[in-house]
Amino acid sequence: EQWFQALQLFREMADSRMKQDTITYSAAASACGKGMQWVLVLHLLLEMAEGRVETNTITYNVAVSACEKVGAWRHALQVYRDMADLSVERDTITCSAAVSACEKAGEWEWALKLVFDMAAGGHAE
Image (cartoon, rainbow, N blue to C red; front, side):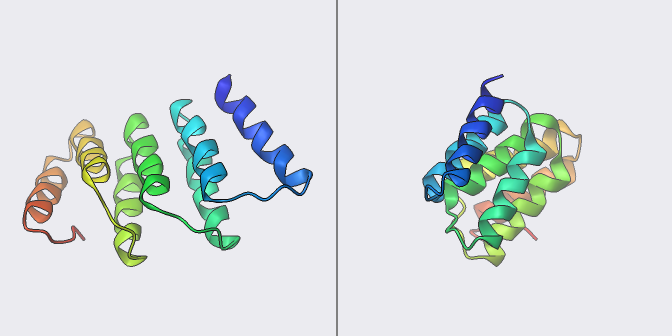
């Protein structure tokens, strides 16, 4: 699968001591997300934090969207919350994916809470 090839190439970069940065991590995470490998996406996000690699809205959007695709709504919400805790800006993509994750899981109360909090400009906690 393409996600596996992308992840393998990403790991080869590290083995050859090529610098891995926000862009390469985000690309690897995006490939894994498209391959429904949400746990790997979350693992890459954790690696970034441990390796002190800067994260951004795009990186987190990949993670929220990956969780949403497989119905891991609790994880999508946690990543959404983590963004606020880390002062990473949440955008329309972030919010839509988090709401969709809740909606798909039948967690309509959480979905509504997110919508209302976003409309108010607040942070859904």
